[in-house]
Length: 246
Image (cartoon, rainbow, N blue to C red; front, side):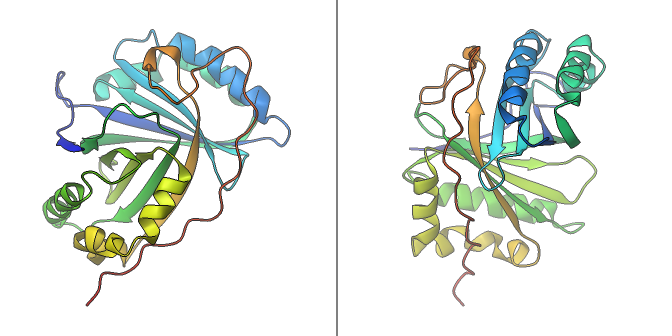
């Protein structure tokens, strides 16, 4: 059973998530993962760091996503000026072709049980000025409808500060579980309240979760070790959501 959760507010400003997308040089994928593991161990000791994940694009094995959860915006900004950040940048600089970074406020989310997480789905859409409250209310309705969905571990609604872009960032036990939900006829009814936005602008990316530092303690996801595991199978392209019935 899943439950809607408010964003953590133990520190002023609430929790944030940073997403660093990197395109790795051909043939450097394993070396990149190993370098990230070494840097992540140092980052884990930074004040306010809650969790880190290394994800790989299921459709493009050279594109990686580094996700970092922070207690608040101040902690994330402090990391950006830290020696640990310099270490990460130096370790990965020669292994990548390009990179871009975004910081998101964690708005709300739903949490499942203690199942292991295997894939992440990132859905992005644009919300016009003055529609933010209506969009977030609609999202809350959708999360209520998603309670008990097989394979859904948790889901969060993210917004980039100062932007009209929202991200729905979800963890699923497997790519198969996610596809089963997409193919289920009830999918359109469940996501119906969001269709007015998703039908205007919609992007979806599927990521394999590659590593989590040991302290994350999530069953079913291999924690970072000194030897990277072989790459997982490449997922096929993900179909777009069905429109809600008239």
